[in-house]
Image 1 (cartoon, rainbow, N blue to C red):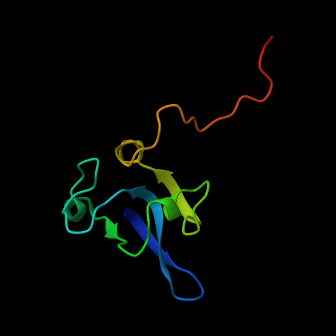
Image 2 (image 1 turned 45 degrees about the vertical axis):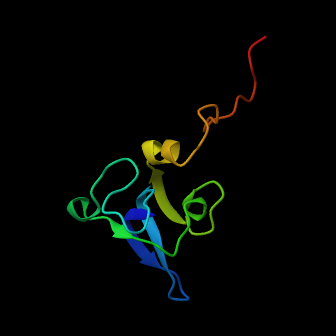
Image 3 (image 1 turned 60 degrees about the vertical axis):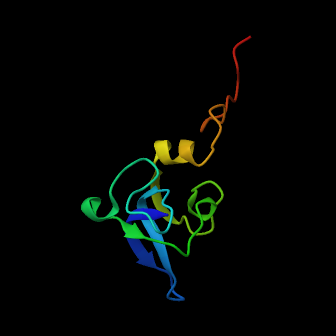
Length: 90
């Protein structure tokens, strides 16, 4: 995966921050087509895509946004909504 910024936790582990994109090691662009070098993205080959998700990931403490096009390319279902209906109308 790739991100717009990085940070180090107290143990010295480098983790993603800012906006994250899905990236396959060995390629020069993200799954949504953004070139890594031109966009100034930081590569994180040691972090899995699932670990960078703000809802469930262990390395997502400072992730602010997940690229929706990359999420779709990795197989996130269209029916998964980021919101939940609390009190539906009758």
